[in-house]
Length: 158
Image (cartoon, rainbow, N blue to C red; front, side, top):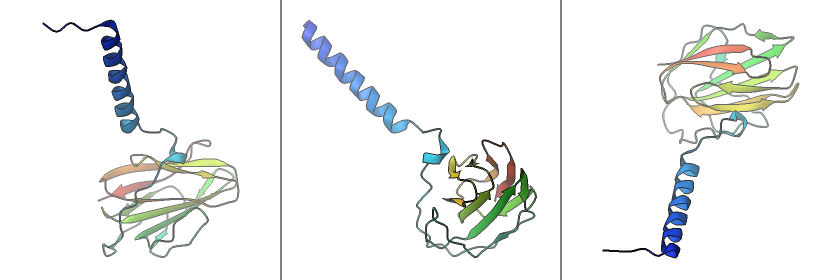
């Protein structure tokens, strides 16, 4: 029979707590989308076609201070002025696997968030904010602002 001393029990307990803390830290996810790190998957895939109903999306990219310089498959640009979304709220369809960049300019400070992908960006008043991610999950995802609670569009990934 193995008998543990109080010091051995304490050491085992501390080791278990340290292991649990490390596991939880590795599995945790920050709920603040402004600190989320977008996917950095290489862009070796050829761009595929995408359809957009509103808002307008184009295949060209407009660099911004917070966006990377990699070529994107789908660029989506939205402007918010006096709580009005331009182009009006609608759906944007992209193909699974495309690299998507969403750039939003708001007349008031806010925060952009893409549900389901948990990426976001701060939107300083009058300054474009961008998120970039690989559309690797199929479905319907809401893109919104947090402070003003505006739905900018619904992203459809097929």
